[in-house]
Image (cartoon, rainbow, N blue to C red; front, side, top):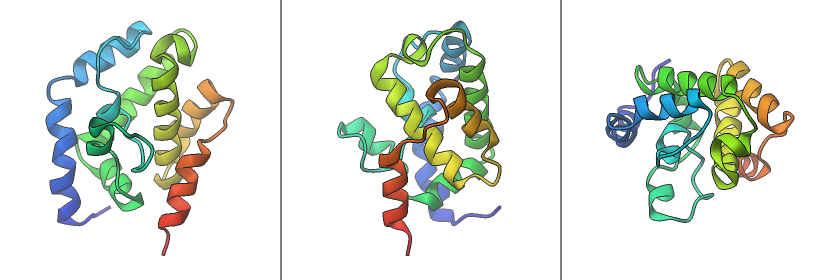
Length: 147
C-alpha cells in the first residue's frame, strides 16, 4: 500500500518517540502492567479525543494517516506487536493500563480496526478487553471525516 509522502513526514513524530520507549512499552505489556508514559504514540487515537498537548500532538489526523501508520515499515509492525503483547498480558484492561489508558486503548483499537485491510488483531483486542464493543466517539469522528 502506498501513501502520500506528507504522511511519511508526519509519522516521524511517532518514530522519534518510539525510538526511546518501544522496547520498554513491550516489556511492560508482557509483564501485564503499564508503568511509564508511552500510550499516546504506541496506541494512537483519532484527533479530537484527547485534550492535552501531548494527546493532540500524537493524534492521528484522519483515516488516511491511520492507514499510513499501518503501512509504515516500522510503525505498522510495532503496532501489531504491541496489540499482540497486550492481548497476551495477564489481567484485566484496567489492571494492565489503568482506567484512563484503557479508554485510549479502546479508541486506538477501534480506529485501526476501522481502517485496516485485516482488522483481525484489532478486533481480537476489542473482544479480549471490551466485549467486542468499539469506541463510538472514534467511529463518529471517522464518519464525519468521510467526503
